[in-house]
Length: 146
Image 1 (cartoon, rainbow, N blue to C red):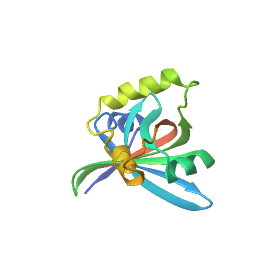
Image 2: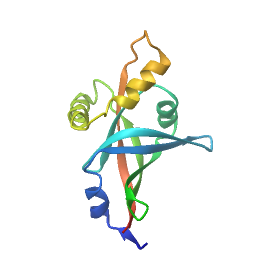
Image 3: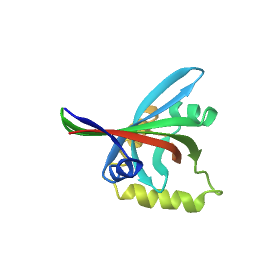
Image 4: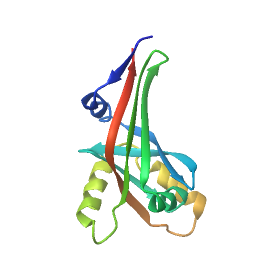
């Protein structure tokens, strides 16, 4: 199997499909990784969540990492890693950005599935408001096996 380092343009091109990835955050030297659906556009990953550990931790330490794989087989895969900064899109300051994020997320199948499952775990009867956020990408790299 040969591996190739990807250019930033190749990394970005690989993020155009459905993007279930992993979001890594940390607090007090403790890492935490969770699955999350993302949409990438113009230097940002957009996502939806509910209040919980990852949001608490990202509010306290906004430095995060996103990792996304596209695996066709053991010998054909792409892996992209991006580091960046968490930005919560709160009302009313980010009304336009929130609407834009919603439109982007609606283009992806099952984008709501992980937050909805979290809601059910936290409270079946109580409505938990969604949190829309983005990750401002600072660096991106990738590897391709073929």
